[in-house]
Structures are given as C-alpha cells and as structure tokens.
Image (cartoon, rainbow, N blue to C red):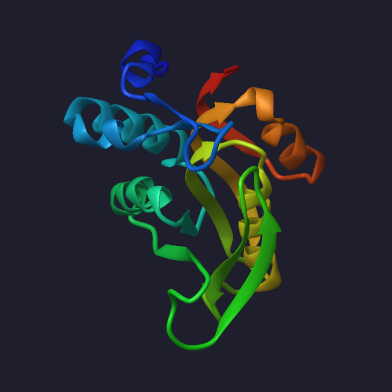
Length: 179
C-alpha cells in the first residue's frame, strides 16, 4: 500500500523562522495527534521491515522516539534511544555534529549494541543528514551495522539523502518533499 501523501502532507505544517530566522521547520507532531495518520505511517514502515534482518531499532531524540517506539512494539524488536548530551546516566559513547541550525552532540549508552547486530535507525525528518550520520557513527562504534535509516519525511532540497548515500548508508523515507 503506497503512502497516503495527502494525509501525511496535511499534517506537516511549516513553522517559519523556527528555531532560528531563515529555517522553515516541518512539524511532525500533528501526525501523532491524528490516530489515522499515526497508524498509517507506522503501518507503512512495519510492512517495509517486518521480514527484514534488523535486530534492533535505534530512535533519535526526541520526535524519533515516537516512531521508534511504535515500530519496536509492532516488530517485537529492542528499542535503543540515541539522546542529546547529558540525558543518559552511566557511561556513554558520544558523537559531535553540526546541523543546519546548531552544533550538538549525540550520546548512546555503552554496550547498547554488539558485533552482528543489524540496526534500523529512525527519526522524523531527513534534512542535511548530519544528525542521522552522527547516529550511524555511534552505532558503528559499538560494532553493529546499519540495516537502513528510515524517516517519515525527506526534505530533498537540503541534500541529506545524498550525504548519507555517499557514506554508504541506505536510506528510506515515506515522503520526499522538495520544499
């Protein structure tokens, strides 16, 4: 079943000049306020990955947690959270990165993955790809491999898919937008 583009697009408002002037932010939270839309995006991704070789789902803070928890439950896979700096107790691995509006750091609890694990990384939006690239580096540091990176929306004009593909990271988005 192909993604219902009208349903998804109608729940993706653009917030102009947020979080800083010049940035047009795609807000996915209305997708999760509509049960039909939330079920649709979850079901589409479950169908894609139900027979795949993934062993774990890694979700990025914070909106990726929404999608990641739905997929982990539906696919009966462990969910690992990749968080912003200072949010995880205990020992962590970290990766610094720069995205379109900030410099940041992602963290992953030590020993979350091992060699042989096949990880699906999920987040809400693929923009420049820097955050997802940093997440993939964290997963790889622990010896696991990336099965695929999945997002709800790919903002194609920002070049993130090309950045990830050039880095040999397979990428899938339910919806590709050029604005």
